[in-house]
Every structure is written in C-alpha cells, then in structure tokens.
Length: 200
Length: 200
DNA sequence: GGCGCCATGTGACGAATGTCATACCCACAT
DNA sequence: ATGTGGGTATGACATTCGTCACATGGCGCC
Image (tube, rainbow over all chains, first blue to last red):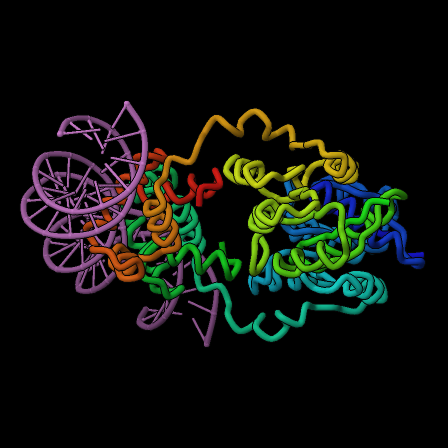
C-alpha cells in the first residue's frame, strides 16, 4: 500500500483528487492538506511515501516543498500536479528532485501511474513538456524579473523605482533590457510572455 | 438517482470531480465532457438532470452553455463550479438561470449539496459572493471592454486600432475612458482590475 | 590583471500613452 | 423635439515609456 499525501489549495479539487487516488487499490490517501507547510508536516507525521502536490499554494509552493524535502533528505517522493505547462516550472521541479510532473489536463490514469513510478524511484514527465523543457532557460536577471513583475501588474516606472529603491531611469533600463530579452514590444507583452514561460 | 453530466477541460480534475460525485449514493455521472459543445450534446442524449460545469472551457464557456440551456428551455439544471470569485461571472451565471455557483475552494460536500438543491429547483451560491454580487455592475461599454482586453494583452494602440477597424485616436479615447471608469492609473492596471472583477 | 556580467546611475531623444475639448451621427427615451 | 448616451473621429498637450550612449563599482574567473 503506497501512502500518499495530497496537497492542493482548492478544497473541491483536493477532495476530488483524493477520491480518485483512494479508488486505486494499491494507493491510500493518508492526509489531505491545503498548503505547503501542512504538506511538509503531514509527510513526516504520516510517514508518507509520495506527496502529490499542486504548485500554487499558500505559505509554500509545491516547488518549495519539493526543494525542502530534498534539502532534508526525506524519503518521500514528490509528484507535481499543475495547470501550468511552463518550462520554467518543470525545470525548477526537476532541480528540486521531483519524481513526477504531470498536468491537470492529462488523463486521470496518468496520476496513479506517476505515483507508482515515483514510488519506485522513477520519473514521469508530462510529454507536452519533456522536449521543450531545457531549450529555453530563463534569460532574466533577478532585478529584471522583479521589475518586470511589478510593471506587469500595472505599476509605473516611478512606482517600481520607489518599491525597489532604485532610480526611475534604472527601472526603465531594466525594463528595456527585459523586453529585449524575452522578445516583446512593450512591458505588457514582455510580462505576459515571461509569465507563460514560468519566469516570473 | 440524479443523472449528472460533468464538464471540465482539465482531464484530471474532470475525472476527480466525477469520482467525487459518483461516490454519492443518490448521484450518478452519466457523461464526462471536456468542452461546452460536448456538454450541450450530452445533456440531451443522456437526459441529464444536472450539469456540473467549469466556466473556462474550449468552444463554449460554462456560462454560454447555461445561457443556451435557458434559451432552449431544457429541463436540465446547471451548477457552475469555478476557480473565480468574480462578481461579473456570478452575475452572468444568475442571468443565465444557473441553479448553483460554487467555488473550487469550497468544501467537497458543497458540491453534492448544490447538485441536490439545484435538482430540486433551488439555488446555492458561494457565500463569499452572495453579498458583493450586485454591488458593482460592469461600467464598461462593449468597445471599451474590447479595447481594454487587447491592450491588456500587450497590443499597442495602433495594433488595437487595426484589429478593431478604428482610428488610433479613438482607441486612446476608449482606453482613457475605461481607465477612468475602473479606477486605474494606466491600461495595465485597468485591465488587471477589470479581469479581477470578471468584466473582461 | 584584465574580461565579462551584473547592479546602478545620468542624460537625452523619439515614440507611445493618457487626457481633454470638440465635433458629428445615430438610437432610444422623455 | 429634445435630451442622453454610445460610437466614431480629430487635434493638441503633457506625461510616460522605450532606447541608447555612457559611466562607476563589485564579483567571479581564467
């Protein structure tokens, strides 16, 4: 019996995923949690074999949890289940030693499959991503990313400068460089592109 | 036995929701579909009592399907299940005669509950939304919405003008007016605000 | 020790954006 | 018939944005 912890912030989806997993005869859900901190706690107290987790959650993202598991050298394997087919996310997931990365729109059998493979030490990666993943590395520097994120939310150069303690001119320089790097026509497009690639 | 059709574009979530519903003794899932067109077809061929549907789907949104069901005077009731706590969405859902509007982060029992209530002709609305719903009506005109949407995706005034067959000056006028109406400092913020309220 | 990269800054210039006044046409309501 | 509001347009203006050249300093690296 493989002991599974499920982490997902949307309660309905959490319950549903758990139902799906529990329906498998060789899998059992030992905890359902709604954020990253609770996930970390549950996998130790429940001696879980596999953590099935979303990425976007309160407190700690699924990627953070995976990284923490790796850092603490816990035995638990991680399967990331997410909406986002973003190369940047997959890359970070693999860097964090995740055993699986599947998309919420892959067929339901995939999930049980990935859990079993992960438990055996293998890896399952959503085929949509396998190829593309390592082709495009994030070209942005930390500052560029930070500035682009704020600007993408509607902040003016002046506002960004204030929040980052930079001069307005510097902010415009970073933006210009970020726009050029991601290949957009303006800050809005650049932010959109970067978001889609998982760089923000 | 209440006959339920489940519509949701993410296969994993679709399977999971269906599992959740099928686990209820008085509910049975008679079809699982991944877009709006298939949903409409399924509810007639399967003589469904209730449609449980996401909003954002290919071909036809869940809101479109609800409206179409109302237009065709079908017997089937509709329960909207969505991520988005947006007043604009709820408003459109109620206009389309939806029998339920619940959020993906409400507890799992809510879903079965809403299906039963809907089937009896009642209404279940996510409490987070019930109050706020009618307070803020969409202040945008069709043109303003259209222009703001494109601009929010990164299109320049010139590009928007081209796509909408307008003059560039007119586009700027609409944008200016939209920015003022939603209360933002620039097109980016305005688009973000409007998206959050479900006006785009 | 120099080379490249990043962080940071300034100054300048042209392009895009946001605002405003003003105008015309049309539909719909009073 | 008169007013109100939307759709469309133009011209003008100030502001913001995007780009470029150029400068300084720090850090890592062969």
